[in-house]
Image (tube, rainbow, N blue to C red):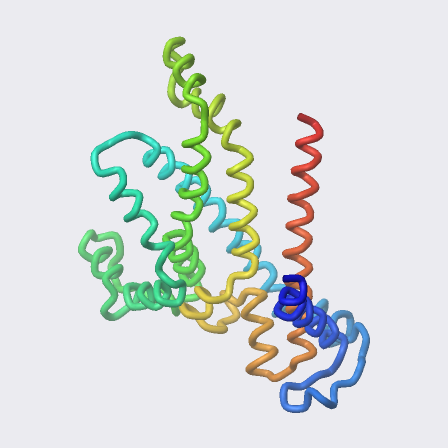
Length: 279
């Protein structure tokens, strides 16, 4: 297992980090020269690249919006699915459909739905009188981020709901029976009983989604391509590696993305240990 992991994970990672310190070109990888931190701190390095910093800002903003909305909606859906009602099993299965659909497929499906000429979204909004003219959701700079957030929320909220629902089903019923006998309002029960009890599972779900959102590539690339307005760190790294053939520079961007994800993971683990020790 360790050998397999080393081949499929460790070696590509080490090579990517090494290439980030070279001037490697896609067509002449064997002629790469060591240039140290030039790709990072040089006059034309990442730390002085406005497009890179815009990609960082876009990625973090996308992460904040999507994870926040998905957490709230996922919690609401989980609370509903945790109740007993006719057809609950069917509803649970239906809720998971967006998550089960491959991301590229769902992104292309939404691309057609958001089309400004024949998309169903514009047709519905025009029919309801919410808009006066069709909107170019995936081409208008002011609407592209809204479109990306909407599609990602639709796609990933079931994942949050599934994890939170699993936590809800493990809660002791005695707490709720006591609260019901005491006549405690359901809203107060949620904030005083339910939320503290599911907090560990909720934090796990949030960190999973944060790490996934920071690395987002497929849904952005499928909907808006490499536009500067919605360019994320992964899109930027791919553009440098493939389109511009600057393997060294693109590897440096990929390395920074990797260390950002690693930093977020480490901070979560440390925070969890500190909280556990405090408890």
